[in-house]
Length: 147
Image (cartoon, rainbow, N blue to C red; front, side):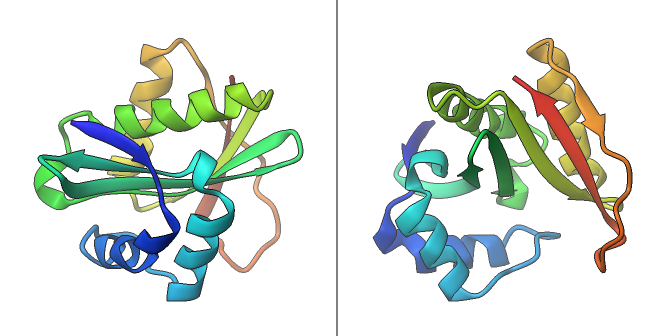
């Protein structure tokens, strides 16, 4: 396994990868271009034998990091490979002096919650649910991780 920073020219590839990683919401091509151009230092692609099998995109906003999306091809899920991606983002945020990460997980996406919860337990971190806020995305739950 090999992890590399997302490159600008990969934005279409990442969108196609997201399309093959249910239950991810697939965003516009433009969204993936923005993430790859402006947030490559906190976004990564996981490779197996030179084939992209997963990715994580994240953005830094002042002193808070936000994990936008994480995806692994179905045949590579449930192997703790998400730990590699999450850990890479945590390290990138730490290098920027960021101490708090926020992320959202759809209430129905039990595998995503399990991945972040397991990672936090392994690393002795706490995945904390924030109080619900009024927004149109009622099923998205906001979590924080203090790093």
